[in-house]
Length: 97
Image (tube, rainbow, N blue to C red; front, side, top):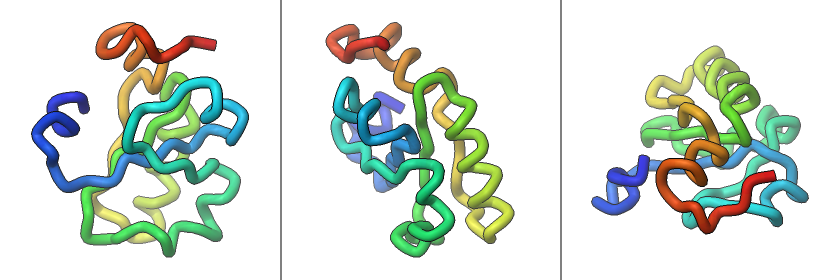
């Protein structure tokens, strides 16, 4: 994921956590669409773009991936380990909670 961001690859990084979690820690460039709002906000996503979903550990974002795939999105995937893994492996300045 970090490599994709550094290269400036064209993709959407979607954070499906809750707003209070987003305030604690976030990945630069990620857009917040909480999992519970995804069904009514999926029209904000480009079906033709690559979409990477993330949450705290990976469970909610996998639910989001499954939902979007069932809704016809093809280029959507889960960021393994979520923002916790990002903090551990990429940017330790991102707080863990």
